[in-house]
Length: 233
Figure 1 (tube, rainbow, N blue to C red):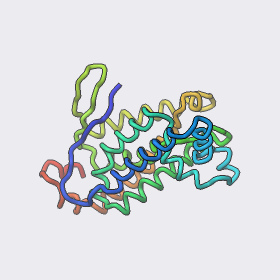
Figure 2 (figure 1 turned 90 degrees about the vertical axis):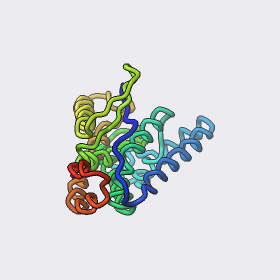
Figure 3 (figure 1 turned 30 degrees about the vertical axis):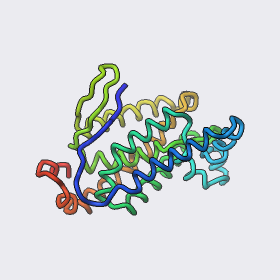
């Protein structure tokens, strides 16, 4: 297995206040969740998680947003927060806090809808920030394709640096293969992974990434800390 643990950092621009606040909020919600008795915790997830069958019938629509701040376990939380830590700050620095907030929330919404379309009758609550984070990753792919991502390779007990387009491209292919494989099967639900939420969020982020690349190109060059970094856009 491998995990991103760092990337090239840009200097200047907006402070990644919302990105770091999201990590804190998600952790606090999770700590509250695990502090509850088992039955109460399950009820909490059932109510605030997005259940496709309910959404299709126009029920509990607020869960499309609240589900982004819930997680199913420690590894689920840690994995999502690690990806958020690595990929979110550069995006917020370039497009600003307000625009990043909109990217994150609407990316998460689009991701939730993609999952619901793929499993409209599911009664299993969808929880996790991965759909919204996938949108951030899609934007990152377009805006910083040549940024170096430091990846921890657990099986080799070492880390390597790879271009963002290689890491994120490989990740996207994995999600697509798993998503297609889940069609007409129970694999997606049994595995506990909403593959199509990842795909939907990532595609949304790519669209926003192209807009950000065009609108903020001059600004990014202004805040870049090296000439080499300008090639990312």
